[in-house]
Length: 104
Image (cartoon, rainbow, N blue to C red; front, side):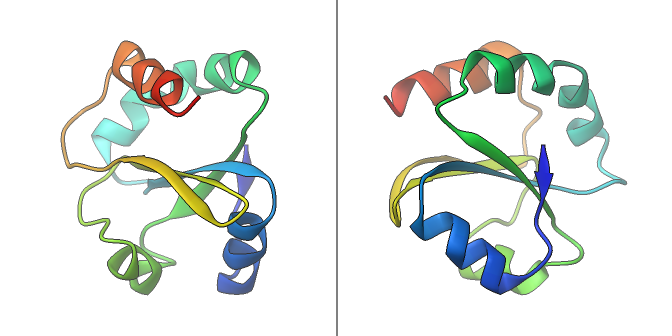
């Protein structure tokens, strides 16, 4: 999974190609819960590039995008938001897969 390094990079990726941004943080137990199966999801849904967004590093970006709970996902295709799975609730592999499948 790629890691977001700058706001400019976010805008570049958001506007070009199909990306799923994972808003997360190292201290978040629900974020750690989904880590073991993320590589499997990346492999299964290769039409998307998955991007890790550190909530603490990009708190303003989170606020701009209405991300007030983590882990959360927002998907874009060439600048168009395809969907969002944004909440503070723990997410299961099945829930995340269902979200990704709803984007297609």
